[in-house]
Amino acid sequence: LTMEAQLRKAIANYELRLYFQPQMDIATGKIIGAEALLRWQHGENMVSPVEFIPVAEQSGLIIEIGEWIIEQACRVAKNLLDAGQAIPIAINISARQFQHPELYQQIERALQRHQLPAELIELEITESVAMHQQDEVLAVLNRFKALGVGLSIDDFGTGYSSLAYLRQFPVNKLKIDRSFIVEMLEQSEDEALVNTIIGISHHLQMKVVAEGVETEPQLARLKEMGCDTLQGYLYSRPLPESDFNQFVKATT
Ligand code: G
Ligand code: G
Ligand code: MN
Ligand code: NA
Image (cartoon, rainbow, N blue to C red; front, side, top):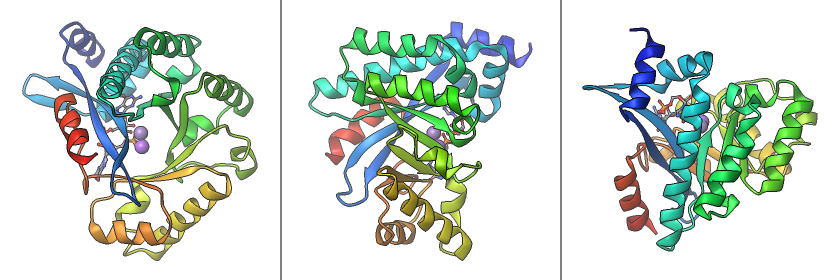
């Protein structure tokens, strides 16, 4: 079977799972959000999204899978809200999904179906998607902003942002790519870039998230630099839904 055929089977057999990685407020140490990350449990193996998302993109299956992800994310956010916890869930939106005219309606309908306030869903688009076809991207982002969902730029620092263009973005958050965090304490260039991105975010009235934080010394340095939010193995790996719900209960 081709990977595409296997992926179709996976959808039919409910082998896709959505995991949730907590995002922590650096000042309070409390959870303030989570990123939804897709997993494919294929027999004994866990297939990485790095392998199958590109296949889903090329085949167009990403639209169907994306709708399922939106549904799951809304359901989880709504359950938490009903339990007294307003925790926004961030969804990764791929290039093809972002260009697809159905995306807006998929999100609008899911919010309505679950009676979920729009601000409890956040969309992550990568810097490379954001910087492409700027007028079209800006129009789509403005529609989502009007709907009330949060918007963030993922993998920030890896693309080629025009700062003049970034300034017009109706985006609430920049997520510093993990590649800059990994060696920020050993490589002064990386540390300088992290510091610069934090500065840019705050100048543009955006929040900033450091991804892939694994150690206490990284946490301490990011705190000194004024970073707002942390995501990484230091706090938690991406968790299945029930473990994630436990984590939320235990940390709020
Ligand atoms: O989740 P890691 O845990 O391995 O994710 C690897 C890559 O796959 C990341 O670049 C991440 O953005 C992407 N990815 C994970 N889950 C999703 C998803 O639900 N949708 C899309 N489009 N990309 C995802
Ligand atoms: O590309 P994107 O930022 O959407 O995906 C985040 C990726 O980073 C996922 O693969 C997620 O599992 C991974 N990740 C999150 N925190 C850590 C971490 O602390 N260390 C490592 N190595 N990977 C992480
Ligand atoms: Mn992401
Ligand atoms: Na990311």
